[in-house]
Length: 168
Image (cartoon, rainbow, N blue to C red; front, side, top):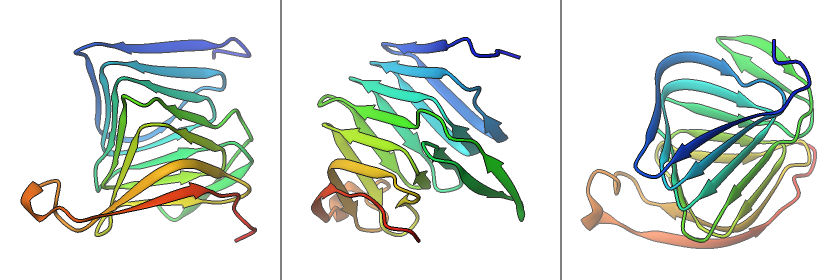
């Protein structure tokens, strides 16, 4: 039990934290993850965060069989057909101009995403869903199918977002 104490996990240059086949990961309240030149990779894992994720000259990759929930306002998360209520938290993701996020899987956001870098969403398998008052500021690139496997097929649509989600 971490109580009300804040904890910071730092992923520095040339380090990769790969969470693979991890099932469900509920991050403790007050957790800040800082990706400082390294990478955070989710593969066949569901992660629920009510804390902060800072990507500073690093990468965040969510593969097509993984999910990340950024919780700012209270939301219910469906895990294996069961509803899990998640209390409100900081729910903040910041992406600096030298960083990237790759969404082959899903990111559900009821907090804030402040993007100065690159967010690429694979249109065949990836999704960025904003619910419950969440917002995304910055450019999100919609990438046509399979470009991550074959860069010669790359087609992008750049869209500028500054959204506040209406009740869904």
